[in-house]
Image (cartoon, rainbow, N blue to C red):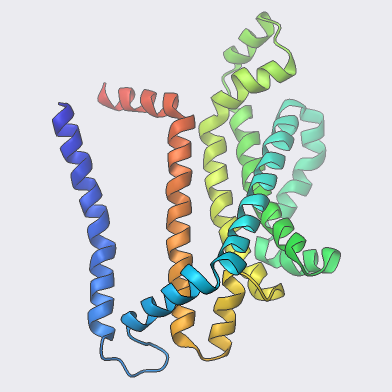
Length: 263
């Protein structure tokens, strides 16, 4: 049984790798003799990729962008979980602020960048604030919905055992609402990544987004394609890391889902 599961996993991994390898092989072959200035050969792009992003601009731009992304994302989801928990637990406050929350969540996060620039100005603080704002609302809504959807019998058990609000949050409510909260965090991560790039393109001379836009405006097509390639690789790796963390934290939930499907 274990051998069969391992073979199935191996087959899925091979299928998952085959698709991007096939795309890259087709791209390499079709562009090999290209003389179009806007679509250089993939071999030239990969050379520029190595020169730019693995050496020259790794510390000054790649690490800078990643630092802003993770700082803003962590601030945004922390605020979203805490405030979402408070709003879910206190109906009066939720009724007061829910219309305002739904108003601001309806505004595209990218549209908030000019407002944040007006309030804070240019600089790394602006980029972190924009990313945090983008991560805040999906996590907030997911936390509110997750905690409000907890079975009432579980809440009665908390009352019977006279758990404090902090104990209820840490030991009961957050684990029970964990799957939905993580879904909100995953949406937050994707939106944060988009806002990170947009904020660098609008108000910065440093970062992956700024360098990619500068390459496009300077007609350095190979550098532009190398930047886009890097963004794709980072987006993929960030999502893989998030899935690993999610699988570790929600191990109990994923295990119960497998048992349900097998039954």
